[in-house]
Image (cartoon, rainbow, N blue to C red; front, side):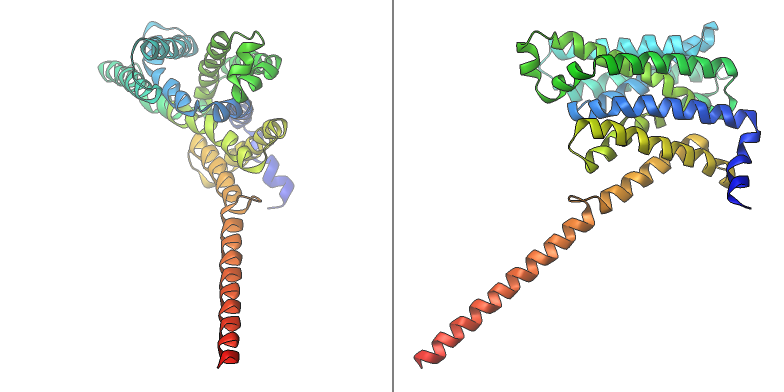
Length: 306
């Protein structure tokens, strides 16, 4: 099979073309947001929100509403609940997040188990990107465009908040409101990503691209560009891998992102694992040679004294 046929053959199927559009759109939005999540230490919050939307999705299916409405309501509600509990107790943020998201996720599982004929748990948890309709594609594109536009418009304030929250407050930025905006956009991004890879795998889309880009650069602008570029490549590669290898599309996309991260982790300069091992070996060799030189000098002095 030549390269052109390899690239065009999957695109002859409408469902796969829609899957490609939805996955890339969701991945781009998640990649941009992930840069701020990584810098602000909000990665666990992405995990919490993605799991907390399950009861909202289940209830939306039961009453016949678009699942995105239920997902966003419960995602935003989870963020608000975490904030309330955090501000009214002495518990640390990670503890509160763990309690809230597990409780909501368990509630969703209970609802699903009580209505097995109405809800396909596998599609909710792992996505059904190959089954999206044209209307759902437009829904993802519109929600993604809204999220991306707000992120870019607030880019400077969000970046300052990530690097120096105190300075942001001093110059008049309402840091609490800005944090709430970021977490609201996180909930909206989870809704977008759910359509592509489902509740569980959307966490990877919110964390892996930013983490990969962080290993490659210390410039935030370059981090944004690298995060988006790498996740687009991984998403397209994952779609093609799922077609030719006949595996889950969402899992293939996330595995491709993880593979990119693994490669960067190994070879990125100057902090990649292989470069660290090389520096360690050179340092050990230098210390050994220096020690040998000192021993030879000492022997020479002793021989001279004798």
